[in-house]
Length: 183
Image 1 (spheres, helix red, strand yellow):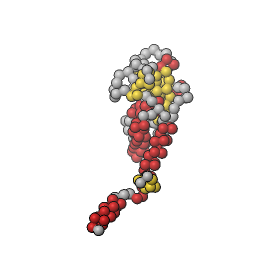
Image 2 (spheres, one colour):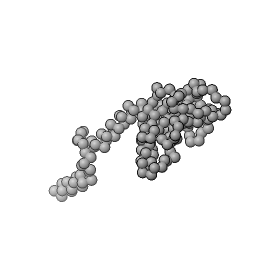
Image 3 (tube, rainbow, N blue to C red):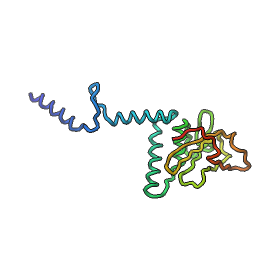
Image 4 (spheres, one colour):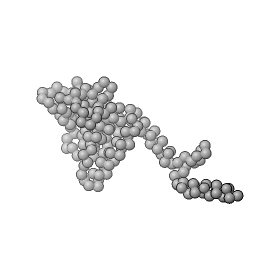
């Protein structure tokens, strides 16, 4: 009898530590929680929205863009994170494998192509980027973050950029082909 009471007491102790508000249903002798269901739905949405993505990178991108937006709304200032946001966007949207930080020549690789990633920030007056043509890249990805912190990108082959004398080329967003990815 004492053993039976101790067993019942242990079951009650375990039940007290359960967050009953998060329980959805009981299946195969275990609880399935709303948190688990929501996480599965979030991952399904990510796979649909970012089919080329390494799934583990998506939360960093979403957290960083959310942080930049909330910081701006709270302070009126901008974080120095838009280049990183642009690179993460390229990685999850296009499947670009990013190079290590401060690697010379390009920001990442897409198959055999070296990709340079440039970001238009939400506070920039003109929708254009300055590209250093001395870099070793075969594709250019321009990522635009607008005032509503929506992100989209346009990729172009380097050979389709206008020929330019000198080291730098200004590339306008409006001059890039628009049949590319967005978020």
